[in-house]
Amino acid sequence: MAVVTLDPNAPEYVRRYVNLADPRLGAQALFATDEFFAAKERMLNPEPAVFIPGKYDENGKWMDGWETRRKRTTGYDWCIVKLARAGVLHGVDLDTSHFTGNFPPAASLDACYCPAGAPDERTEWHEILPSVSLQGNSHHYHALDASRAYTHVRVNLYPDGGLARLRLYGLPQCDWAQRGAGELIDLIAMENGGTVVGVNNQHFGLASNLLMPGRGVNMGDGWETRRRREPGNDWCIIALAQPGEIEKIEVDTAHFKGNYPDRCSVQAAYVTGGTAESLVTQSMFWPVLLPEQKLAMDKQHSFAEPIARLGPITHIRFNIVPDGGVSRLRLWGRLARGAKA
Image: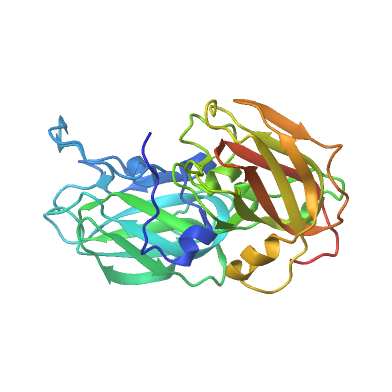
């Protein structure tokens, strides 16, 4: 099992927001001017890019990303990506991992809002990232203007080359006014806008995996901490997409057998103001939403009766005791009408 490590140079938006270019959420690479050496879809792969020495296909060296042929005419290559959800973008990672003599010298981003279909020649594009210089085998992080929602992004490579990964971090847009008053909603689902705002350890698997749709595909598709050798327990703090009152909690330990947590609990609060960092200490004293519950290996657990009636909440602290792995977490509730996070 590979150790999952976060780039220590990654900005806060990487940890705070959803990658709206994730195909597991529904993102798609729709069109590219050229993909001779490597298919555009590889650029959206949620796994880190890899390099396989000696692997070739009929067009040349196999590369893990989107790679165009060497351009012998004027112009530049570009690719249109449909975001998983319409959303407000806060940042990008243009990742050229393993591309050394074949990376683009520069790139830029345009975006549009086309909720009814794919962009066409009449579409109005807005520049969200002016041309920036790229280096080989590197992450390039750039904050984006979070002023409006978009549905599609066009990544431009000047003039050609390979991009290992494209990550577009933002907040999904949802018309909450149109959701039914009695509708039961997973208020921490990533596709609804739930986000992880703090976690004490994610050595083997990222806490953000808890919020992904569906069940985990394997043990690597979940949140897993290292083995705890000291007193205490591991935890993560999650912001709900919207304030709500919780009626059911699901904890799924799919694929975790010799390493699932012995127990879990949930604390919760209605938070106004402060920062992600300030919540860490505060969360220790939040009221208990779900008292400690015994967990079992490779199982979907559903809790309703033990849930405390705390009223509307905006954040939870999910505690696992003492450590281990959980595949998915669901927080089913109803919107708190009139409440504003």
